[in-house]
Length: 67
Image (cartoon, rainbow, N blue to C red; front, side, top):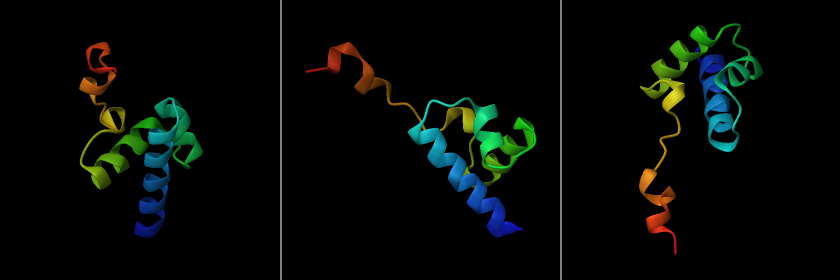
């Protein structure tokens, strides 16, 4: 069970990094029946809620830093 949970959460993290899919879609694609169960498992593995993953770097997105 631990392997399966780790695989699902790792797959979810990849989806969050590489797509703009909402959390409910990522949860469903990785086999979670509810967004709550997904968020709880994700936080257990990564130490943060999936809504804040991946962390956004504000300084690099600011027009002042664009060259």
